[in-house]
Length: 206
Image 1: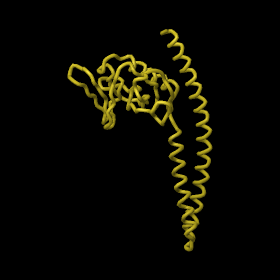
Image 2 (image 1 turned 90 degrees about the horizontal axis):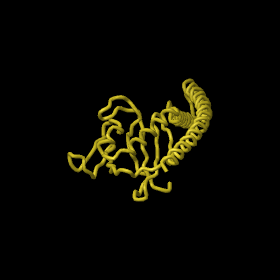
Image 3 (image 1 turned 180 degrees about the vertical axis):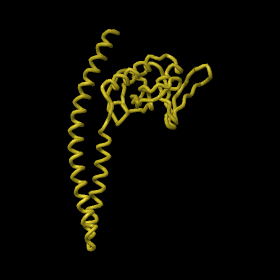
Image 4 (image 1 turned 90 degrees about the vertical axis):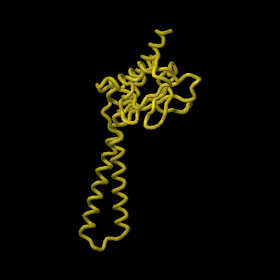
């Protein structure tokens, strides 16, 4: 059973890696197209600004068009920046390895090393011995830790310098878990590694 699970996990990682490569190629093409549109808009804005500078009788319509083009340019710049990422395949492997190790932990205190040391992150236990119920707090939102509830990787995506990994959970848990992964120091380990910045709840079936 354990061997089959490892084989399934390896096969899943290969499929996900293929998807990631194809997705990166698609994103590269899209970034190039958006960059061309951005350059064209920039030329139009520059031309309009030049006209506005030399003409004292510029119409309101031309001014509105100039404003619209500036807003479109700004939006394109934001979209291009959102698509750019320095995350590589090895980063994905390291991030999923962090979750695999996190899943194997049997006590709450053992999980602390996998949590990114960030402002707004804290740990809560019923007592000093480490008895549960136990929970993390991420940016003011509480997340109850329950061992042996995370199953297999369902989906992932990359957002700039972060990797978002969504995992299926056991039937008793109402939501799937999305782990927001970032490179950061830990509570007792100051070396920057892929760690959990936040855990979000995702409705099952979506």
